[in-house]
Length: 186
Image (spheres, rainbow, N blue to C red):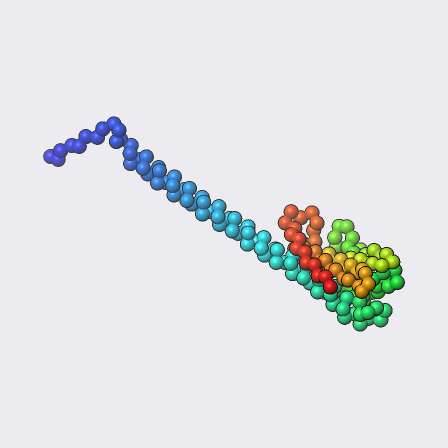
């Protein structure tokens, strides 16, 4: 018969304690990895939406640059479709960006609808020596993106500043709305 080993009260339950300690450590590591994964997924979704916002801002700025430098419509002054002062208040239609006449339909209604439903002419603030033309550029109904563009002209010689605010969604109340801004001055 094999001899019996005796255990003391101090060593009883050590295996259970050690197993619980290892299990707790594994659970903590697993939760930390899960937390990192969730944060990385949120970050990648934000980066993706940020790209849409910057692309919308870039498209708005490029549209404004084109119509400021290459306007070939009748009534354009110095190849620009945008107002420069009370002497030239810009043109009223035919300025197309993304198949949208931004001169005629550059201001959306509230709540935001796809153009041209309820949209009105672009906004102009004109003084004797300066002018700012503002318009929205919508990518609806295909995409939810939009851009708010301001073209400011002042001084002699004329200085132009284009500020384009791009949004990943046109819904101003969305908690997931991102804005990216580009500014061009010349």
